[in-house]
Image (cartoon, rainbow, N blue to C red; front, side, top):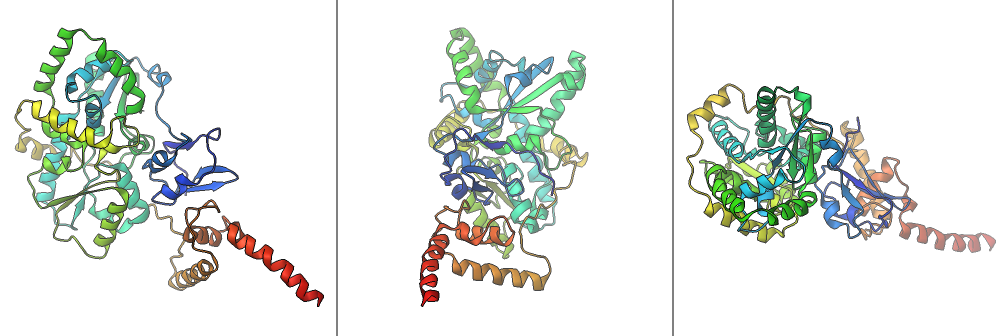
Length: 436
């Protein structure tokens, strides 16, 4: 399988081989070998769990740099809805948008209305869909990766509607090329992201041949410069920004910063929200067993509470949720996007993904039934010889994963420290027995 680029890497100068990242990874994509954490690219979904778990700042996000901005004649920042939740309830979205032009970007673009349009398009598409049920949101790219790797039977459940960030970048590039008389490659469009999964969706997109975005900066990287720009703004400018925000930002779009926000903009009430990778995996297990067929749509996020708890945010999750709610109440009641317009764009395939989302199965279990049964028996026998302590000392997150690594030839049984000690203790006893 071809190795794809990931947005997570490990700093060898900071990694102490503590295995916390390996044990936190929901897809068992991290191993500790030769004193260093290493990524198994075919298993990684770029969820950022390893970044949250690492106490030594060794698990890092691969994001864009100021040098990337200099490659373009004109640069634009598109912030996620979560970015608006980082500066407190008194700072309105438009003020944050204007501050981005003081930290290195030529312009900004608010995608909250595109977010609201995608919610309407999803609602309309589901109303004409015949199943399978439930349909699953593609908003969280880590969820899509998880389904590709662990739940390929659920691929048909994914809603084939492109994400707001890609649609916004696609339209924006066309608009700027026409207005500024630039070549498409001279315009750089960068996302301000709350997580590594979105960065990876730009590096290695799913449903697209190539992303319409040129890169992404973490919220944690831009927070300080933007906060400084906000504090140095003139009072009149700050008031003007707050007034403009109440006119231009979509309240429904803003709600996408937290779980439940996507379905809050839909008329279909037969929906549910699940967040947190363990809870999501439990839900997907139940869907595979035939549960939730009476649910039309599931909004799923790997991060607890949705995007507000992404691995690249600054503000604490519950404070950010409260900020979103308070800013939402301050936004004036704009007219929603017309349903007939959305349905027309849906018929014209404006929202449609360009490519099919395909499975990326990586399980070591053979496809042949006899071989699969033999493999499971061998794994079970090997697991019985292991201590089942799940200590991680072997470099794998647990004994079951270590057994699979042994069967695939990536490790050996005595890679387990307890097996090695038992073997060392056994050798002198056997030697004394032979001497007698």
